[in-house]
Length: 216
Length: 282
Image 1 (cartoon, rainbow over the protein chains, first blue to last red):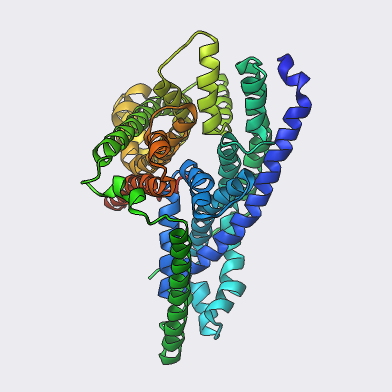
Image 2 (image 1 turned 120 degrees about the horizontal axis):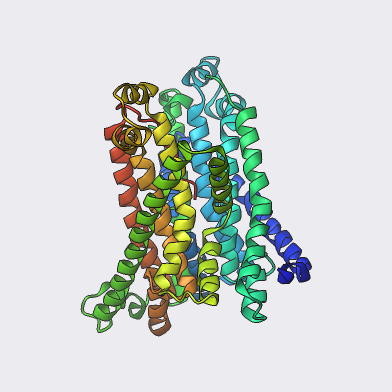
């Protein structure tokens, strides 16, 4: 276990790196996901089609392939970027599909009477979504979104395995792969790093579930 | 239609607005597609040399390529099937022993469950592939993936099974004890068969997650579909086209599996012990 204590700084940097990627992706995926959910419930058929196609395609495609296709496919079409950019964009696109579904099911969880009442007092689609449905949907959406966020943290390890340096996974490849330190303590340290993020996050989701439980 | 609650059936003005919006959206979409196509064309991505090995049966590389990819798909399905089977066995074991066991055992299980749930699958696979050989357990690459996938998914499935068992009405257990069945018999003969029905859709949805995660095998050089694709790209030099085809195969297989889950859910809903299914997390 000396490997962990000797390289505590490296692990801490990795933890911060993972948190940085995740923070960035969380904000971007949340925005994209909400826009997509808006598409999926909109009265304009082509927008609904775009939303449905996006979710169906992205949810059924492994993140690994999305990342490979971005990093090694896009440069062929003249689109260049760093591994970090491709990794972050790939993870955002993937996560947004799950955010969209969580938000959409939240909208579905709002009682029909609420939207009907909003319409009957003359609110438009945009107004009833913004003023009546979404504020209520957010309560139902926070716990599932928390689970999506936890999955995103774990998926960021795939981005790491892919070669984006400076996050938790890359600590393992540095210590075990490059310096030849024993695998068991090195990987145990990485696992502990992820648990440090994920277990508190899981507890937060539990608290949120209790706090935002709506009796309908 | 999905959002019908959110807006009235549109009147003449609304219909006109929707038609205009539809036209604008369609134009923007077409514009984006044209832009992307021009970009691809400018970089020679529509050359027949890039597409024909994948789509033209007359191409000299076609048979070899598809034999390569077909074998990869087979490896992908093998890994997924093994991981699913082991996860089911361990999942049922964890769930059933957890329900009827001493307190210390339950707490131990909760600890292990929470631990394994928090470990990224890719780390679990690397853990198996790096740590096991260090202690003399050299296995074929397939097994590292199966071990990594099973570690995570048996925990997820145990939660599904537990929810399924808890959803069986209490009267069933009471009736079983009134008949003089032991706890084991009650579980085996009464609870599990009913729970299995209600949890089948969720279990099948989890199969999609497992199928997608088998592609992580590419990182440890297990020759599943993605790795085989990477091998093909090395000689054919057509990454965009090959990734599209591989992604298409995954999407098709997973879409069919999802449809099966939805179909079963619709068929089984309304029966004893059934409850709405939550979407599997990514």
